[in-house]
Amino acid sequence: MNILITSGGTSEKIDDVRHLTNHATGRLGKEIAQALEEDGITIHYVHGPKAVLPKASNCQFYPIASVSELYTIMEKLLTTISFDYVIHSMAVSDYELDAATDEVLLAQTIAQYVMKQSFTTEAELTEIIKNSLFDSEALQQKAQKKISSKNEKLILMMKKAPKVIGHIKQWQPETHLIGFKLLVDVSEEHLVSIAQESITKNQADLILANDLTQISDNQHHALLVSKNGIEQRFSTKQDIAQGIKKIILSN
Amino acid sequence: MNILITSGGTSEKIDDVRHLTNHATGRLGKEIAQALEEDGITIHYVHGPKAVLPKASNCQFYPIASVSELYTIMEKLLTTISFDYVIHSMAVSDYELDAATDEVLLAQTIAQYVMKQSFTTEAELTEIIKNSLFDSEALQQKAQKKISSKNEKLILMMKKAPKVIGHIKQWQPETHLIGFKLLVDVSEEHLVSIAQESITKNQADLILANDLTQISDNQHHALLVSKNGIEQRFSTKQDIAQGIKKIILSN
Image 1 (cartoon, rainbow over the protein chains, first blue to last red):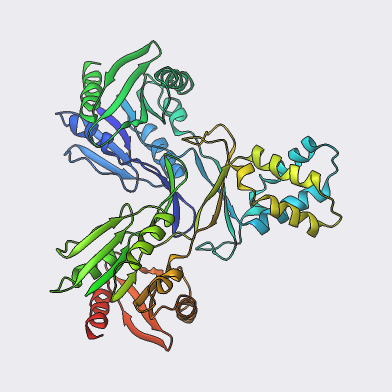
Image 2: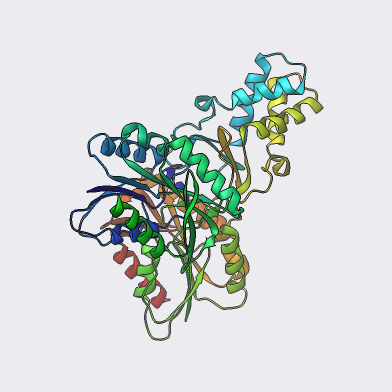
């Protein structure tokens, strides 16, 4: 049996020194991998830069940093190896860097667009300005290895990163997909409805939905959601790992 | 003897999930602290969230995340304890979050400014737009615990963070200050000249100047620069730690 687990968080490079990252530790993915240390199960483990790693003899590791690196390795794995389950617990950045700019260059770029076009209403002007914000070539500070700190503002224009979860079933329609959804301080109804949206949109079989305010060192409240609603409730990472193991082994 | 060491990197919160950070590991600060494990030396160790920590019995730890937290703890320590040396090796972010916005809100905010004022030249318009970028209240997305990923762009407006190194001698004029400067892929002349600028500006006694391209797991080339020029050259973290120890003990 082949299982693909993603764990930890992605990290988007801003320059050679700075990066945009998230708080994911990789502890949940580690627990799941360790629970699955069974005869005949091979785990392919894709993880972010600072993720804690499982101690499991049947694990093959694939380190990545950016969403784009994640996309590449996932495409390669899912189009070459047949997986019984994909457990996509990695916290993937919604955005990646489009351009790093400063207040002077941004104002100049917008002004050039505005001077070239005519407008009468504020709505028309807003539209012109909005379009200028997509000219990442004009906005990008001249290639610098470390962005200069001479200007008052550092403006990071982030664009949507590719949605890796949405491609998993396209790359391998016959696999089972357990996705993860993390929200912050929302109601259970909202959490379930967002999880079900993700099930439909990404053809996921199950979504583990959790709320950052319900996660601490010793507890990790989470809901396992299917298209029918809440299937199971968990309160620790060990619980979650055992629950997922049971589902995989009973399938 | 009291020594204050800062180590690791700062981390600026973008929202409850995301943060902007840097690659600093804290390994150099750790080496320095461990080299200074001597009778009669007390180390106050201020460190970033993911810094590796020294194993030294004479260390008191002060964890921080943001530049603003660093500023607060440094002010407190330097105005209450007398330090023989401050070794400021932490990689401190030049910027902190001013506002997180999206392409629609940014364009609307700028358009409102432009509609209210008259201009004839592109330079005048640029000035108006530039001023609108400082209106962080208008730009800030309505308080969200996790920034929505519904918009095409996430625009992070970062403003200059307080320069902690510039305050150290103001808080405690009689201390000795060893600062650190990290550049990426520059000539030695440029590195020395930037280090000397920092000496003058921050009243530092010495600056340890290094280039990211000269740092790997096993080597760490660095120059110890005074107002007179290069005082010493090092090629590993252990070298640097021993060199700094010698300076502190001979003083």
